[in-house]
Length: 158
Image (cartoon, rainbow, N blue to C red):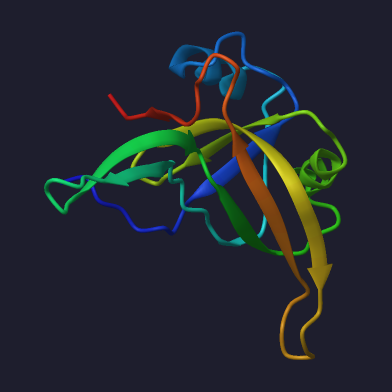
């Protein structure tokens, strides 16, 4: 069994692109200097989920609905953070919000599984809900698929 808790999950971000959009290309990008920055003060992680569009039609002779997969979307997520205006990862995320270009990201799980993908930041903001809470931030992310059709690349430990 290879289950794990969420404690220890990290997310790293860089404007650099891998030489190839596969496990080898992403591994090189995220392990070669300059090492991409981790987004600090993460308090709520993402769920990665590819969703296919449903194509359906009803057959007149069987009263049944036929269902097929159409195009897919690699999805979106919102990260919840404690706002830290000196955190390098959060600063890169704010930079990414203003850029039309995709950024490279890596999510690392405590059990060694890593997920690599291209993403665009569509929102990054902060606020103070009340006196008994930390100033928080949210980061709205859309996962983008490369022109070659590559979405999320999963790397499992050897």
